[in-house]
Image 1 (cartoon, rainbow, N blue to C red):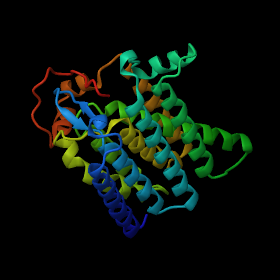
Image 2: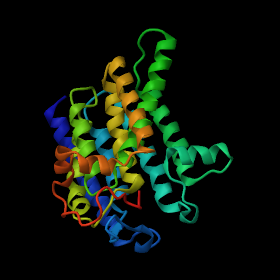
Image 3: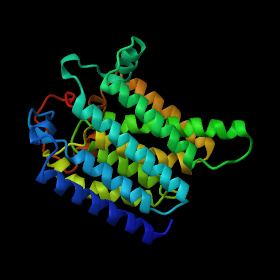
Image 4: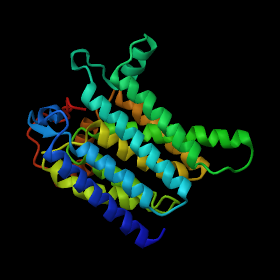
Length: 289
């Protein structure tokens, strides 16, 4: 991993994030009200952070160090997750709110396609495409097919998991930055620059509770970090990571991540770093996620 490429990816991601956000602020598509949501305090926040971050991440991923196929795969996964997440942000039918992965899959099984269900299918497809593009061929055809399947599932699962963390200001940004730094030694290590650059631009508004990532931004962050792990870690590590992602996703259907964080002192300190003091009930969930 060349430091120059990491810094270059960080600068490009930061510039693209800031530039896209300025353009969106000048003329929000559909009007500012379409992009306004209510956060966990009951205060208005803007979703414009999401597409700006997704654009910055995709640009930074393409400019990062590593094999061209891996960089292309990272951009496909990031852009796909961001696009389908944005569809869910803007087109969700709030009169019939379906929550959680289980809820959306259940609706699909009954023949009802929710925007969340469309997002699951879309991110799954683009993650699998990214894995097919970026996974190097090693060994037998069966082994390669297994690697592609595991990598695609890991990318999609991480995209969903990071979105589940986007319930408090800065939480998804912090988690994504930490996971990306841990993968910085891999072939897509330069993408860490993209994650850190986009996060640095988004953090003031996110932590200041003026903006939120929404599904578009959080899914894009998770997809890029997931691609770093999928294309950079040995198969046993990828299998263990996928098991962890699946386990946390299933746990989220029954356990409040916010409540667990609030009960764990060191997690609570990290979670509250840079944020306004909490004034709501402990462990209460954000209705915008």
